[in-house]
Image 1 (cartoon, rainbow, N blue to C red):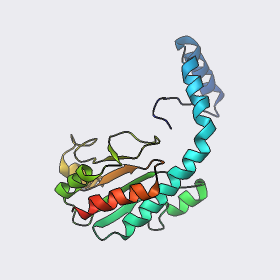
Image 2: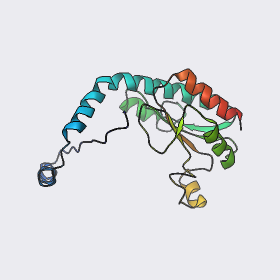
Image 3: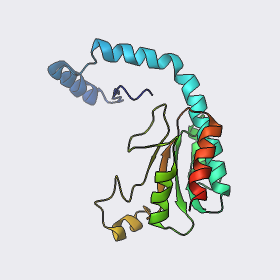
Image 4: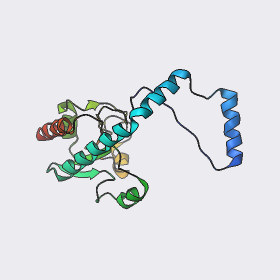
Length: 183
């Protein structure tokens, strides 16, 4: 949540796999160090508050983008139009902070203009921190995939991915509004 730690857990209901995992942990020393434990404990103290703001900001931005004239499609499980919305309602207490959207005319140059015009969102390929991030898969994370292949898997030229943080909603909204107005 603070972009300073990578930690995880492996869970299984298989005794056989549990024993294999236990052996692996013992033989490789795959346990967190004291600083990692401190950072984890520190982060859990504000996790609930951060998640509330994270989800609230994303939900409101998704609704704004969904109604915006230059936006063609918004992917966010909190929107009723999302194909996984019903499942998300059953499985999630809220819908998270990841949003992706495409421009109505699917123009890559316009998508890149949006990335240049934002000031609150930071251009980066990471996700899940307290800061809001923006990225363009076609020119960043998936740039090595030929356009035809990207299109087949739903990664259009104008697709933009947002990892929404905990900043002021008004600041985030105004930042995206300004950037979208430039295209």
